[in-house]
Length: 475
Image (cartoon, rainbow, N blue to C red; front, side):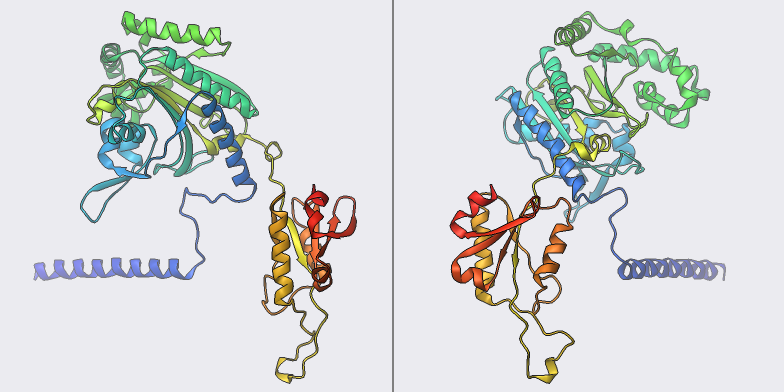
């Protein structure tokens, strides 16, 4: 009897769950569609701003000799788990991970460096060094959406692979600094730099931190207590109030650096000084991914649009040996950075972004209303129609304009059998932002004479010209 009771309760529970799922499906299929939480559309000025930033980034990287690379948005999960570290926040909490139909674990790309390293191995480029590469790709992390932090976001990044000399670090920092300066980002830019040393330095410092923080375990936040057992260096990056006064007295990394690590970092700081790039050595700066070593850096933008917690607009570091972690034949040195386009867009005013010139609209003068004897087609207002040959003429005019400027024929959007009067078409076009500087008008009369009417919307004048002179009239 007891067994039957338990079975009955389980059956009722499963039935309730199914009903809830059914209601949820019905709700989503009947309401208006919406974007996935943490993933946003870009259109209009937002997209112009996005492309403006990327244009500056690509131009700067190209001047440094970098070439573009594109990697798939989906990788095998092992690519990121082996390189980012299973104890990192990205792998532990933020991956969009799923099992595909072939029972292989797949992950939506959370960052670009591991994918670039995998691409170098896959395309047999390990012996074609150095490689200077840049990318602009969408990344995915399942974290709490907030201003300046989305679940789908775009990064522009550069990677210099195959150069172990610290001059490569200086080159990458300089490239990023030049990019941000060329973009003329409002707000003060602050470059923070630090060294994590080589593997020997990192191991010694990690042991010292584990011993120090272990004495204060009960006072650490929950996240920091977890990191104490996995990666004590990440505790230094904590913003939790209970951790700040403890990390302030933590051992200094500089006390555990090997002579080779000190020399590497000294070259980097001397190089930045020689290039007149201002920087601040921040001994508490660590990067959240396990593959970093030696030089790491972040650029903050002091702006009210971002706030303190989201102020980082560019970050990077050195990652020697990343290819060997993925099973490559060589332990290649590498260094690079990535910048979040959405954060840069937040601090950039709309008026700082050049908006493309609007296309020249080609308006069609409809023929005079034609009365119909068919009573079934009688309406309050006789229809205004455009003959097919006039439509074809308008499209030919637009084609000729496109040799000099962008252009488009203004079609009737609501009823394919009717066409708005010229006055309404003109009022609609002039109400748009930005307003076109010229409007071209055609009709049956203009088609017969092989001419067009060009209206200057700024001077508020118009004149009729031959279609052969349209380029001169618009320029």
